Image (cartoon, rainbow, N blue to C red; front, side):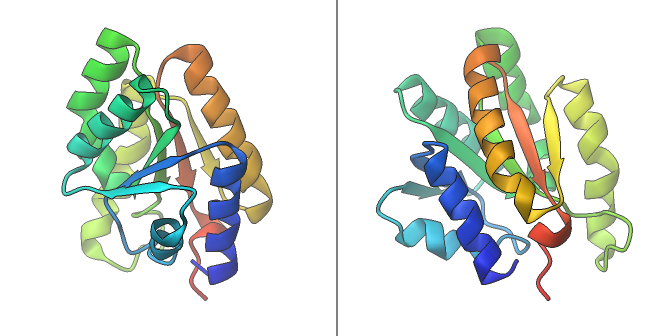
Length: 168
């Protein structure tokens, strides 16, 4: 991710009213994390497990805050059980932003399974999602997703890919 794109994502989160960042940092969005952690407009909470992260984000939402969970798409697999209980059982939504690992052209053998399982799992969990490929789509996607979790009382995922996560 280029620094200017990281700044764009940070600014879009602010404009949408996001005030709490819960994250298990990953390499695709690594330029974004220091910006968020250093920004006093956000409470920045790194976690050791995505299941714990979505639970913490849900707790902040219940407390009247506007959290987002940032993670690699593989983390969605880890978080499925807590997300099912939170969303399906209790109507407690979590806004998630996922980096897209494992798409065609993936350089790491271990990442391929992430790409194969992400969308089928999102669909199986009935989580609406948006794939954001272009910088021009970031702000609107975050705003729509934030509004949707409040309306639906269910999770939403934004998948960042393409020119958003490109490093060169």
